[in-house]
Length: 429
Image 1 (cartoon, rainbow, N blue to C red):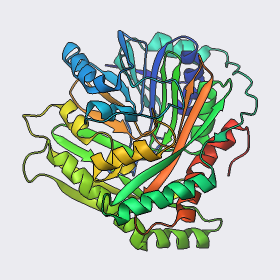
Image 2 (image 1 turned 60 degrees about the vertical axis):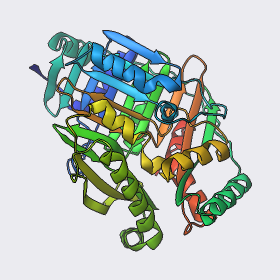
Image 3 (image 1 turned 90 degrees about the vertical axis):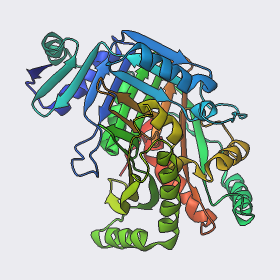
């Protein structure tokens, strides 16, 4: 491990580094905590990984975790950067995906990086690979000229009327007792030529989040402004941090405080959060030392640039008989993006949602050489395939017996609006 000082700010360095790397490497993972030092249990570590000693693209969703285990056994004590799509559920349970995908994308991708850098305020900590010469080359490079992006028309696949019809069907399922909570998502699609690094940087400036990601695997890109952690392992401690409960920000300080208080006291939002916490407790208990599952924080209220959200932390101690991948697999996909009971709800999602989720509500993260890991939830994300020029996004909310169709529909639009404005070259406030 070595340290290379920077002659500029780390922000200015990254602004140069991402397009420079994009032009030269097929595999890049940039995990950006955006300075959220007060995030409960910490945000992402500020890692930039690129190049590949090995790279694996998985198209069969039933083989995601089988392949993951094979890679982990073949590359012990190594850095592994991972993307797993929501369809990876098909390798966890006896499930399938019947709907058409909104974008050509892998079921999962893995790469063993040549270089792993940790970005620090005054320099680069080199965990793996070369450092000083590459850092110097990037710092002295001429700024790249991104592809001139024309306005991209984003199609809302599900109309408001169709949303309301699906909402009524979901409410009937809940009233019959077949589910307690269902996370229902609607897709947005587009086609166009974008500069992924530049688009990511615009998205991150507008909505800086603690689990932000820029991820490139060949022609597949993930540009994510995720506020949510899926699961993290440090030593023998596991945490998962579901988000359930969202409110827009106010236009004035007084309105903002009022909306924050409404969220914190909402019976509906508290109920949603508690149901998912119970689900996550059950997921973690499958790989935990008996009696170790606990909830250090229930429905903590946190503020982000565009929304207020309720975040809970569920913690366990890993059973020595279980592997790290066992922990991830038994918790996948994340309960905050499915509902309860989990397997039943995933069947309802496949039946009622208009498109396969594909990469949306999957995860990106890493496993380090000491068997620690950290993974986000792929929400508030733009997915792009540069070969087909397809763009895909989704937004959703939790449907419970308390839910109102108009409110849930507006929540979906609140979440998707920043990304649509960026693709349309509109100013977003």
